[in-house]
Length: 389
Image (cartoon, rainbow, N blue to C red; front, side):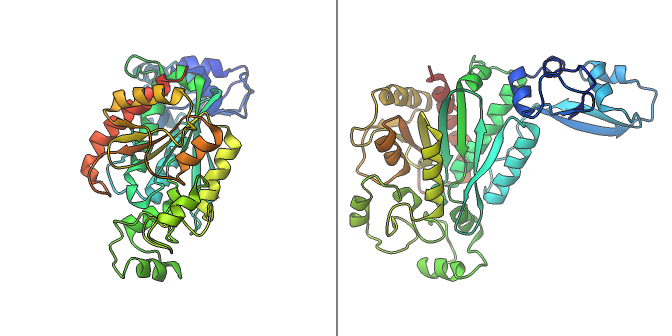
């Protein structure tokens, strides 16, 4: 943060810190370009190093050493005994290569929003157990693209992939680094990304941390799991409902043919569509947001599903071919499945929607696959941005 002198502008700070003006402006939505003396502005992509000055070293010398104008340091250091030196963040700090539960995700979200305050977070609902369902938005473009992960509990690695991507994206945005020869600022201005990185926090926590302490949920999940304390195969939410079988796109077909007719670790579509707080929140978000496209990340199979009952628009095929080429995944037009989030989106809005099955093997995919999965995802997400006209 920097304390303004009278007459300072956000454009001035953009130039001083070599951060695109659009990002500086979006990081400070409550101030105008021309600041008043004493106003606080936030500079994205920087943290601060503090130390006691016990030498004759001047601010001018320090400014030269960190490649910043001395005026920037003056505004941050009215107390010369404790110097605050801005330091550009050069590397990602999200560590997705670990057991990535809700607490890990929330800490990373808070850190990302602190260091890159042009990221906006809001709560769109709560899970059965009361964990917030968080939407992040990045960008100022008119075209809205939605990404989500961890509809299924044992596919939690998708959240780690998405969060790692967010960190990479905003790091390259603020530093101005090209991505495969492309300036990401162009896409920041074209696209607004909406991201729900963990649709099913109760389920993810169950898979990674075991049953919750709260009753009756602890006893019930143990009963549904046959008394087994290993929940690694659990896909459903904490009430035993498969969240990706909950949407009103031929839900009755799935309900009739699914073997579980009651809550279970996987595949039970509920007693009616949209009964669960998680799916209600996702449906409400989608209905209010006018998304141009959605991408739901799942595991596994290295496939991209892109059609539903002929409701998909012509452009869907062009885009999926670009995603498949970038990732090496196979584009699959139709599958015999209904009631999924993507199915419902395509049926209702007749816009491009995709389900990406990351990696291959048996769920939950081992964390040792993270690096290869992330590289494939990164190429796909870049292709997604490049596909926007």
